[in-house]
Image 1 (cartoon, helix red, strand yellow):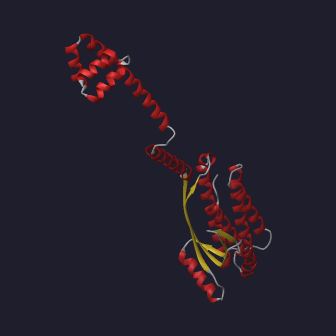
Image 2: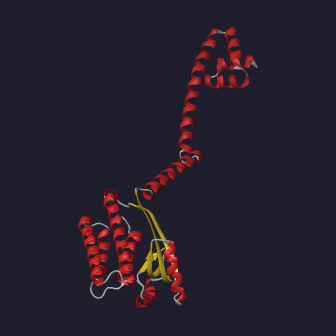
Length: 294
């Protein structure tokens, strides 16, 4: 076989193919030693062929590598998919946390509303409101958790609310006690964040004005206050609301403050009853509970 290969080396015009045959049949190094023994010229030719062979093989290797890279580029690696998904989820979580977290204003209060009825829409609640007002209750409608409550009165201690509710039931007036607490408010815009201290002051003032109306209503019920004192208290509440209105310019509190000032005007327009002060008190509490800060 060696003689045949050496013969092919000496007669073939395609030396590179010959070396390829050598590489397939034997360990190339052993053949090269044999060839060197027979003829130095043949060994020189084999060296040249070897260089060409490895050079061509290197070209083929790079071509194959580049071809496979181009081929694989049309497919998405599962590892790449998992990494991309992880990054996308992380970004979404961060965006969600930023958008939903934000700065929060803390203001803790608790109200106990004695309510005559709970309705699922404002129209039904409105038809009952006048009846509650005629009975001597506030008749103010407050919205909470998608329901509408027709209120009779509002208290700051649970025992007081339960005692009144029990007394009304004894008079055949169905009622319930609704407890609403406030703890913190989300500041939805950059403007709200800038006005954080102003908004906190608004809450404190509204809470004080609501308590003032509550105390006046109780004083009217007990006979401690007459019309003069009651109207004086309403004027004081209105003054406080106007001061807040001037301090807030054109933010989220302004529409609510104007509504409360209108309630003061209605209450002071004629004979003042305790229910008028209770309605004013609950309206101020409603603003504290349901306002959106922006």
